[in-house]
Image 1 (spheres, helix red, strand yellow):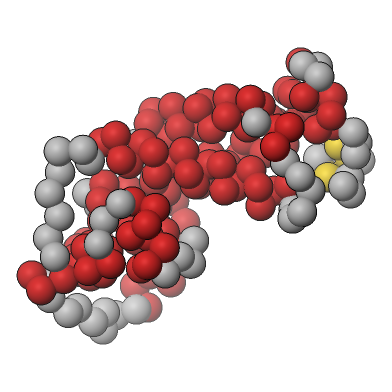
Image 2 (cartoon, one colour):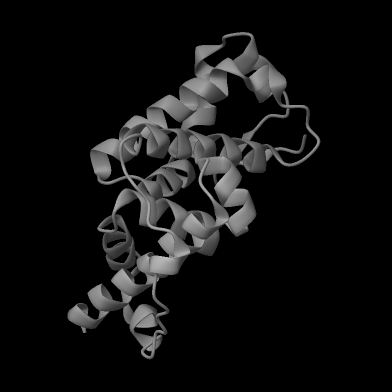
Length: 185
């Protein structure tokens, strides 16, 4: 594994993962400090609020440290750790939506965003804030589809919902985002 740069002057050594597996707290702290900001951004996209995102971050890192020995090095370590955090976020979604009901695609309506320029005018923080206002089902499907690039079939499998439900949730998320963005202008 190549060295990961903490900044221009310090780098994480190649043996960092092995040191973390061995329980070296200093190495674990270095790994955490390097990846926490990027992983927290993922958590924020899926969470209802800052506190929930922190909970997901904490749980995600516990999983990372408990399962570091399962990283085979086939792909990038950052890709592996990102997948852990996406899956942890999805688990939080499932726990929160056990009693929620979904509307099938037949009940959804088509929405086209005529003012796509509104999104480009928002700051990243403002856009994240708007996305966090979406109901959890809409937000999760929107993140998985629009940001992570999953197909509706993959989303359906991950969330144990139908493809139609995934499409419906995405359509409703887009409609709601469109309304919210109109109000911001």
